[in-house]
Image (cartoon, rainbow, N blue to C red; front, top):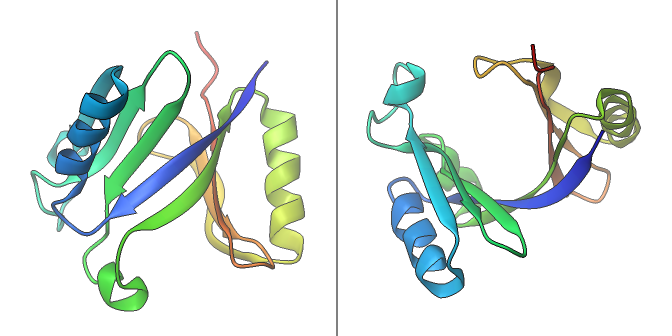
Length: 137
């Protein structure tokens, strides 16, 4: 079982692909980019970035385009702390502890990509994304 802490960047709509390509040029590594259309997300820009991931020899960075209207509430690039892994009990406990004194924006539950995912803002205003990998068959 494993858990990793990964920065998750959120860019103004349409800027994620450009930014992540730039980071790939700077740091090297393998970049994967998935659009909203690939995941069947209706009402979203089809070529917008739902999820990008840059994996280098030393670290991983993930990112996405801001949801429509989000820029008006936060005004620019934003950083999330993302806990990812397959240690379900540990990640569920941490999510619950962060939520106890914080605010849950999205409950920890199964998502369209098969994993459990939730979003919580802790009592200090930091936003935590928790993604529990679906068990492999």
